[in-house]
Length: 385
Image 1: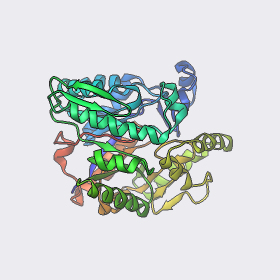
Image 2 (image 1 turned 120 degrees about the vertical axis):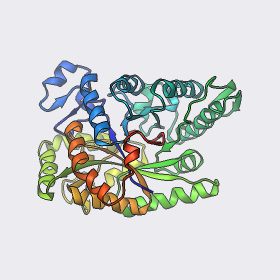
Image 3 (image 1 turned 90 degrees about the horizontal axis):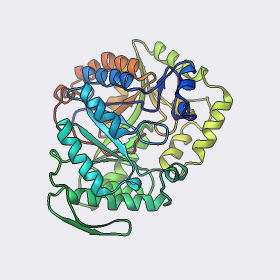
Image 4 (image 1 turned 135 degrees about the horizontal axis):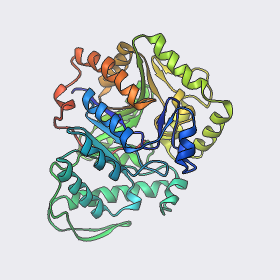
């Protein structure tokens, strides 16, 4: 099992600070551009990131979904015209699209891009966000619906009429006239009791946010045991940020500068908002730092500072290129195969990682260089952010 590397497309904005979707909350892009260090997510800038990721050897880029980012389907199919091999993890929500239509869209995307689609099914852990899209189910029922959704999608891809009569979906004769080739594999994330059985039944790869290795191992053991009861094998991935430099001191200086840009009121407001999330994974992220700037290195070279203001993935690999590679190798030894990475700003950090850490991993025999050059990468369904 080799390490498979993926990068992130900041379709909600990027910059030299811990910018997140709040940067565009006003929907006033002109005002956003006047904020120091913020970059608008226009297609020209996103194409720079996509091209860099492809050149550096990343296999795919994760593209988020939500109110404050560009539509993932439209953005990535445009970026496919700017790249040759790079794959795209397209995020979308089961609650706002028909599973038959999603299956059809995925099949079309595969043909248009010659097999470069990655599906990122986001169940959703924030009822306020879900209601913006007309979804009023509670947390556990959203996971039950995702279970049905993925059953229908897989059924439709069989190439013959598929019937389904469930609580959330009723489909008669659903099919994609031309099934996708290759058929997308499934990445799926979720830390709640409601999420585990869905992952066990449908995930090819279970994706978790970057908790310390001991906690990641607990999740791996949990999902693996559930999957075994279903007669299935599941692979594993982790979603992390990264700050890698030529020396450890340089990397930690960057991390500390990111914190220096945050005033206490900004952190308090972000923690208050994130604390209302129904997502068990989000609550686990918050527990890593407790809203405090103290003791943010929660495991050697694993830093929880990003999670002070950013929802979703809140930890970063921080250190010299060799130290970051050491921590990746530690996760890999637990069974983690896929690493979905990001950094601020995403263009520059892609180069720091690609030119520093990737050679380290290759030297340790952990990379299949063919995968980064357009080899047979799996297609992903994950927890999005």
